[in-house]
Amino acid sequence: MTTYLGLTLEEAAARGAKWTSAEIVQQPETLRQTAAGLAGDTEARNGFLAPLLANPDLRIILSGAGTSAFIGESLAPLLSLITDRCIEAVATTDIVAGPRICLRADQPTLMVSFGRSGNSPESVAAIDLADQLIDDVHHLVITCNADGMLARYAGRSERAFAIVLPDATHDRSFAMTSSFTAMLYAALAALGGAAHAPVALIADAVARTVGKYAPLAADLGKAKFERAVYLGCGGFTGIAREGALKLLEMTDGATAAIHDTPLGFRHGPKTFLNGRTLVVLFVPNDPHARAYALDLLDELSREGTAQRVLAVTTRPIEGRPAADQVVIDGLELASDLALLFPYIVVAQMIGLWQALALGKTPDNPNPAGIVNRVVQGVRIHAIA
Image 1 (cartoon, one colour):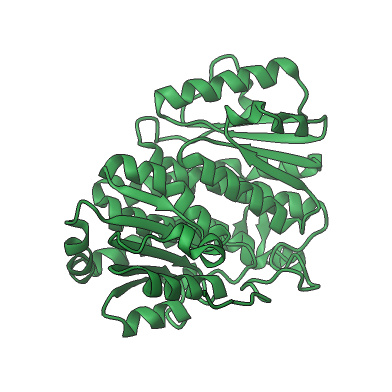
Image 2 (cartoon, rainbow, N blue to C red; image 1 turned 120 degrees about the vertical axis):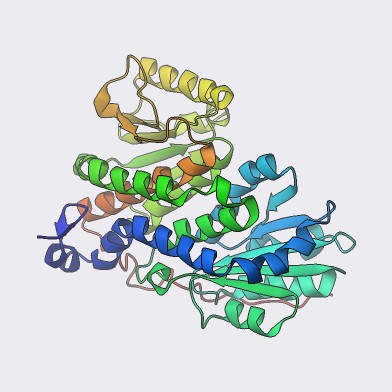
């Protein structure tokens, strides 16, 4: 019998988790499908990007709203390092509210726009503002919806190119899961190159993580923690932020969640901890950053304030109980870019099982419509 994170299809449907559970589980396959699609589109994509990337003064903006913005936050620091380029994560919500602060008229710019549906008002408005305010601007659209406004814009503009991902990545659930990892992978492969995006390695690691640690996520849900903290540095700061959002979204705000960096956490946010708090710490492979993560892990263990401290790592941490470690096999020597994918899947599974333990329906956690799958209620104001 096929199960999805420990749920049969019938159980998942009855508990309002049919789409969310299936879309978490399908990520190894959607990553492979995404890679195959990119391979088939290499010539056209490179024809668009190569002349732009030949300019050493090119500014690359990774942009989106909500989860789509966190793709950029996860990739920008690591992509900047491997490409030696000016790559920045700037949310569309910031661009729309402060276009003259975020955009530079005289600097050639490639704006990379992420959008599951491609219909978020801020995503469309950010492109319009860039076209108005930047003298030399081009757009790379990465979207899961061929019929969305972003894809349609790219189809009619000579200054834009769209990477449209397989339809399976266009998540039907409220929370973005497979859409997040697919768009993350597409941007990594397009801007960093295939050598930095080994799909077999990444997809296999995600599959092992789902298979091995779904029971742990279910056990955490049974504990019904009241608060959660996700911690990560570098690219894992974006992953930590996305992990916290997944928990908030799927539990309809019933479980409070914050994110921070291992060093930043001591500067006040640590007061968030109590005896009903789960801490999830994403441990890098980079040895320098890893040392700081392990220092905080030791500190939290000594103090014993939190209910549970969980380390997500590629190598077992000596002296730490195995039950408090999520060890991602097969990526011990991989770059931190590859770790982004299985690490966020851990957070997705925790969010799902916490929601189910609280009686929430992850596919549609807020039936009242206070929040929506595609954001509503945004009024776009013209710039003076």
